[in-house]
Length: 142
Length: 298
Image 1: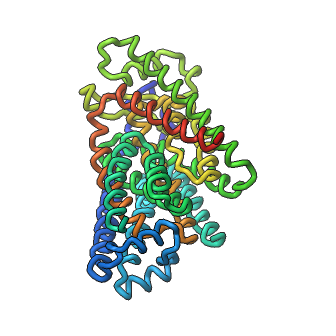
Image 2 (image 1 turned 90 degrees about the vertical axis):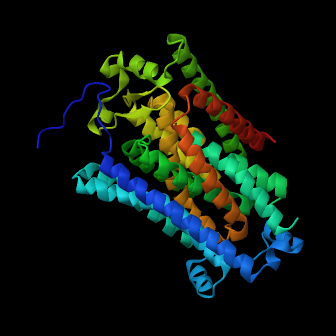
Image 3 (image 1 turned 120 degrees about the vertical axis):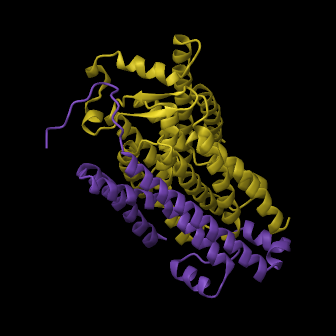
């Protein structure tokens, strides 16, 4: 291949070809739709199984004062889904939402690698490593 | 108040936060946190946990349409994400080293100064082309007239960061040259550090950094910020989840509302006039600056 080309100022060089953008866009769209569907399902399940939750002022007060109990570990979420608990399904939807931009990043990394753009593959991988590192640091600290 | 009423109010407020946040490249925490703490006296830990999820929702829904419509500069987003996530980790590790009130006050001052600078950049564009086809055409032509050395474009050349986007209001494709990439990376690192230290998204700092330092067009800056804030938020959201700060019955309506608002808002970004977007941004970060100064000085 030739040496890096020098471009004229403001030259039209699409930063990421249509394919990369389309792939990342598709993953983000899918993530948004899937997590919205899971969130709504969680709500419907909670409504059907525990209708009293929504009509009680005491329940609202407990939630606002951070005195309510709800799943906050991956194990508890999976366990709750198994038991058909609405709040666990909602948390799963929230986690899917949080991971959606990260899934976009992974898709970008794969697309850059396919094009042989190793510099940007490495940059994407570094970002991913930093995010995974802080996941681990955070889970240990909590 | 019952939980049903609380959920409905939160859902409505979140639609507004998502719409505004996605257009401006901000997470919407500046709307969500006051509604939760002042309106519902929600425990502050849960308010921050909820706000982080709102940032993730704005980012996912906003970036989904921005990326598809090619406003987001993916290469710039990926590169800057490296600086901002490293900064977020640095900030999280340094938590407690600095006085939070001092940092909030500092954040407020920095935002205030940035908003004034961004307002100045608008008047340059308006003065040169009264008809204002698109401020970005003027700004990018103005930049291109300078010698290449003066514009620090070499790093951006090497990384192929320059690009173009289709501007609906201008009715043409607007090419742009990215300048001062090194400075942009430095500012993103600082923005990430501040967000890690204070537990806030920092779209309000990221957009001015891309606009003022790197001369990205306004729409590209807010769209690229939409993707960046989600990556920064993901890094800390898991911590809040493990700590038990993410209450599903509070976060649920917020997440759904923000998704709806951000999907609608980000689709309107293409059709917005850049100068109006800039004015709206300056007004909103003026409000955020005041919130931060109040937190620091009160």
